[in-house]
Image (cartoon, rainbow, N blue to C red; front, side):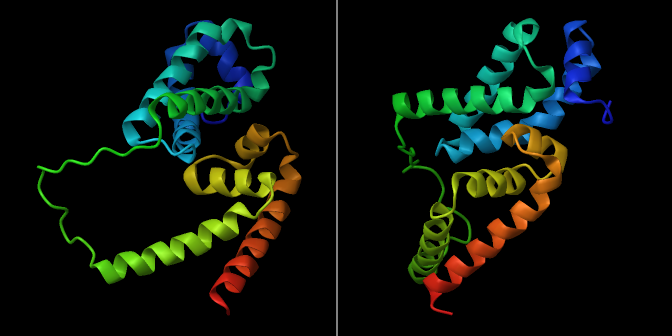
Length: 182
């Protein structure tokens, strides 16, 4: 099943082929998860977005016009649902005040340093183009996806993905270096 294209998997799934469904889920779950988490959702909300997206696929499988672009359809569906959930639930993170303390909780100094580094990284990342952010996010959060899957999801030629990714990383390195003052 691993060597089948998305179009072939969709065709088999339409015929109720359970192994095709398993392959679709296995191939795209990291992509959906990263899409939901990149919207700033908690794990439970991200899981709900993934579940909603799979349900939407099951309900709309026979209506998908371009099965070869399944990855893009799933990303779009997950992104829309994640934005809806975020709007409804907000960005609050619940805190269990009565639960056990975190093991090996970092010191306040370590937290401040980590926050500063994260701010610098995310500031540099947010200055990238939309295409660069999408490429780097997909490759980082869904490492099991092939370049073909990533290119398909982003609607770009697969032969330009590697060079575009390299340029994006180079720009990110320069921007992080400028933030740090290297």
